Amino acid sequence: MAEFTGRAKYLEIADDFKRRIRDGELSPGTKLPSETELMSTHEVSRTVARQAISRLREDGYVLSHQGKGSFVTLPDEPRPVKHSPEFEEIAGYLSEVRRDVRRLAERMDQLEQLVRKQPRDG
Image 1 (spheres, one colour):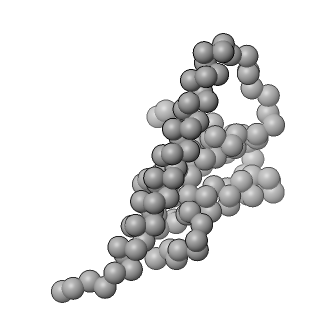
Image 2 (cartoon, rainbow, N blue to C red):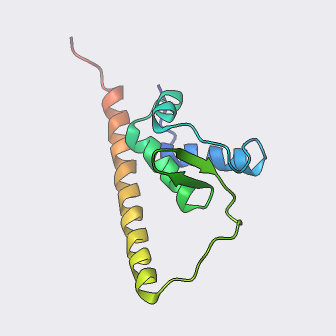
């Protein structure tokens, strides 16, 4: 079972992938493991696996394509950035919502780990 280190598990997973990408272990275009594979490999919930991939996407290390998976990219690769002021306002709001959801996911992860540590009657 994964131990609680004081840092959210999804951040640990995302940081590990970022390091591997920066070190060249994973090159652009490489497909990342699925949520299910991350759950199994890192002994985490689907929420944590999802949050790790989401964090990589937000930080520019991953592009996800529905039905195909998530693929390595580099944060400094050029992307179109010209958007309307309305779009930018909505994007800012969504960023705040994502931050709040990440905080809730961290709390859920902590609660799940606490429950796992509880002695079982039976």
